[in-house]
Image (cartoon, rainbow, N blue to C red; front, side, top):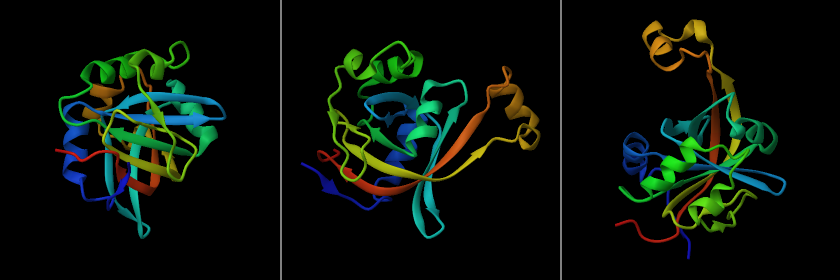
Length: 172
């Protein structure tokens, strides 16, 4: 059962979950769905729209899928749950591993989009990409560039309009 919620009803929990353990980004292109753990992102209101900004490196399998799909979902587990699965989805590549199968996740059809959410999570956002921006390395502070981008594998920032936000079970 899905219960619609305002995009910002759980914004504190969203930020805390990203900082403490991450969330599951799902992208689907045709019949291939992939999950990736994200630990960085932002939720807000831009262009008079609710927006979730995510970051994906060029080297990730998910990057190519996002470029084709134009949409994504993010599923947030309850705090301190699914740690093993978050780790697996952050370390394994969808090029070689079916993460839904490995994590024993059940894909749940999106409410408005063709990309599924993860049934084992409680809070879900469905997002249509409305803007993307490649990082400009010269504009990034030197300390961040040295700490996070020594291999020069920069991110693309994707701004997704949140077209649906809902719970599949009450968050406790």
